[in-house]
Image: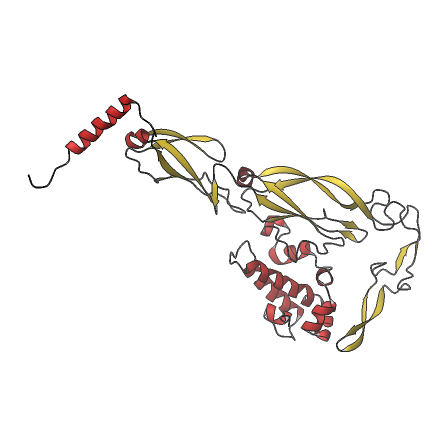
Length: 364
């Protein structure tokens, strides 16, 4: 049996809408994946948003209370649940901002749910580690439902007059029968044909056939913020599929490619550098790569295999915050596989000098 939405939000069934809203805000802040790194956070966060999408809407809440958790989940799809759940208003109202800039653009309910009328669209984009570290401007080619140029998204043929909607007979709402485990029930919903206005245009646009949009390919400019992590989603408001009731959002899911020089550990990056054994012994300058360019680093005399050199502030930009992580260099001492006779003699002299200076023990 599905978990009760009231239990998910931690409120009683007679809770007021304000109490439900406060409970949701507390849970959302606590479980948001940008703040809580627990492995189960994403699933719990989506559960909380699903619960609020229903209980935060008085009409959906009444249906939920009528059916109960199990019957409600059988009767209503995820699309039904999240229809009208405006992510922009939620962020602005609860978190003091909207979209990606405030909380990482995390997707509430999944990759395809109603935005402000149309469906949201998911697009996967790969970026290099260096672009993820420093930020970048990208352009993606997106095939989606765009606003119709002929009718400007209204769905009506230019010059067409408004008439009474035949579907709801001008009422703006329709009544339908639904068979449930409790028997036949009457459900009153907003008319999908006229979106509750009770009126429609006399003639549909001949380009989009009244839908307000049609499929086309567009080039979309994307600002990749510095410090973005693999799997994060950027939200471009109103850039999803368009319908005559509005536009959904475009979600850009980021994939950070592996880098040949670095591995990432949070905001830090790690790199392995091979240095000649004589440089490790005598000390000296070496050149190491960073995310921006190469830098000169001075090794101390007697640097050992596996020693770490830390370059402060040369790592990833901290996402949503100021400052950068560090770059951690691991030193690998490079020993020659072959020696010339002169090199071999030099090494032997070093060995003799080194061992001759040691105090010997034993019986003679």
